[in-house]
Structures are given as structure tokens and as C-alpha cells.
Image (tube, rainbow, N blue to C red; front, top):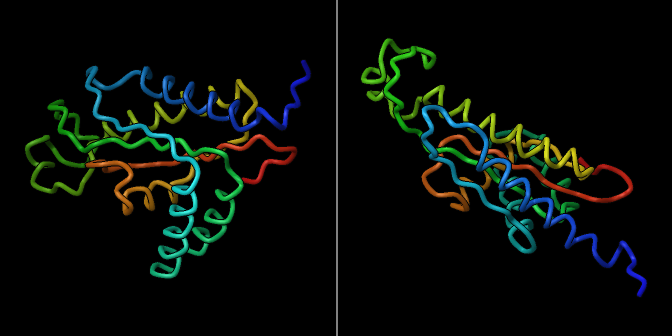
Length: 171
């Protein structure tokens, strides 16, 4: 039997995406509280995401969204990692408020622990992709579009990681 790499490339990238999801899920969480949503986007939903990113660019003037929207069309899969905003009860002040009770008066202010958790998960996921030699890039633009499309529910901080296995990194 002869297997041409071109015939299994998509399958291999999806396998890496699944391993990235596992790496993100098992990454350490503040106080051991897991409030993350992690998904893989493929196929038609990548096109939807790209179209939403172009709309965001038009609405906000953040033109790098257009570049990112074009780049993700070259991806086989996109891993999206988001976290919900949940008071951790530490009163650490990292959010800028003296206590969690004070911060909770402003529900749009993220808990610093939640934000750190999503960052650690992203780091674990992209380390897995790098170990397996799959091109990737962390994009906040994907996260904003994924939030607007309700691909992840109830998440506050969301980021996307497009994946590609080609001779040149499209990101």
C-alpha cells in the first residue's frame, strides 16, 4: 500500500486539533475551577467565521481583521478556547478592584484568574501544535467573531488558533 501525504493531511491536522483540545483541557486552572469552552471549527463554519471577521473590520476599522479573515480560509481547522467570567473569591486585586465583591459590580470586567487560565490553556494547545509541527497562530480576531456567532456560549475571553499543514505558513 502507498499512502500519499496529500490524502491524509486533513485527517492529520484534525488529529492535532483534537490533541490540542486535550492539552488545553488538562492545563492547570486557578483553584482547579474549569470554566472553559473549547471547540474545533472546520469546513463551512470557517467561511462563516471569515465573513464575520470582515464585517467586524468594516464596523470597527480594525483592518487586520480582514488579513486574518483571508488567512483562516487557508486553515484546515481552528481551535477556539474561551473562558467564562467567574468570580474566584480570592480578593487578589489583579482585576483592579479591592475585592471580588467590588469587581462583581462591574460584570464586564474579567476576573484576572479566568483570563490567566485561558492564556495557560492557549499556551498548552499551541505547544502541542508546535511539537507536532503544525502551523498555527493565536488570533483574538477569531475569538471575537466566534463570540458574535455564538460558537461558544457564555464565554468572556475567547481566542482562536487556526491550523495549517502546508509548505508555507499562511498565518
